[in-house]
Length: 221
Image 1 (tube, rainbow, N blue to C red):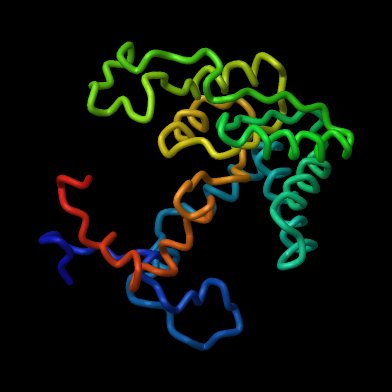
Image 2 (image 1 turned 45 degrees about the vertical axis):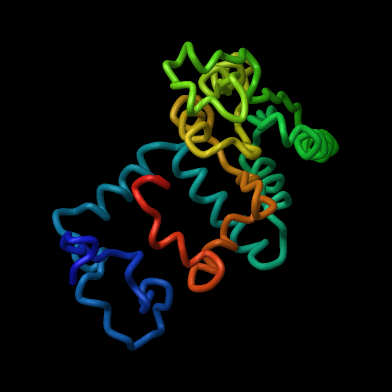
């Protein structure tokens, strides 16, 4: 198979069998199954990582307990609160886009009502001039001030947060935050101004209204 002139290397994202998620199925694994192709002890090495690092093991165990108890019953806000409680966290950090300050205030109120200490940092804290980051003028919209996700992560670390929640940071800004966050982090809100923060809608309509996403030109990218 070819894709855009290059060989298509198939992986989990190309699978319609998901035998890995149905142990009772008799359907054969696809020939390109990533899990079945593992060799050299990768699975055992990953298991050893969980066992060797107490935090990794507790994160995995707690995530499993929240999934088991709240699957298809709890909204993600509730899952997050319960997860933080079960992990024994006391101080929660919120890395928020300033456009979602209202939502972050509501989140902080709910967290505090559940006994957590909360410290939040907006994306414009320590705001930078985009020209200082060598961002060309044509890419300085919608304004000349750049967000500072690295500083967000550093300020949350300085505040001693044990678990950080991302609230609507822009694509790429969230990447920088995750890269520099010293505490485990999860996303509560993914920003999508066009689709009311529901980016999966573009995937649900990829064969209809958003079909053009499969044909973006170099100029559009």
